[in-house]
Length: 155
Image 1 (tube, rainbow, N blue to C red):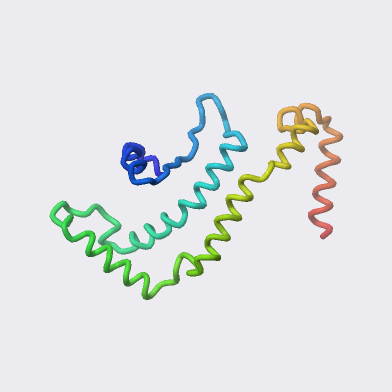
Image 2: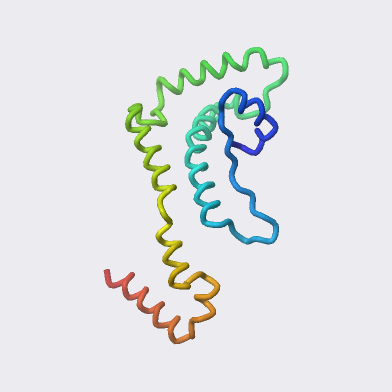
């Protein structure tokens, strides 16, 4: 849910709509936790469809600017007309296959809920960013960098 809709959360809940918002970065922290980042990333993927549809509507000059108050009674009609034109003459945002769309959404949620193998590896091996950089000697760092370059350019 966009941050602009925070005030309408009670109304949305009454309608049975669950509201999610991206995580705010806490004061004093430079980055989110892995869970917060993944949650925000999943939310961004879901919101992309809505934002993409809004972007299509805003490609029309009339809807890309502030609409005068005198035009408010007609805006809904204009949006319907513009949406009908887009539906007729542009490619759809989804595949049109409900089962395929549901499968993609289920896969996104499944991958989001999977055990974080990389996180577990980092914790068990003790190779988080802070301890990793502190424990590296210049020789070890240089050797690992050269190995990465060899792999990259030998392919």
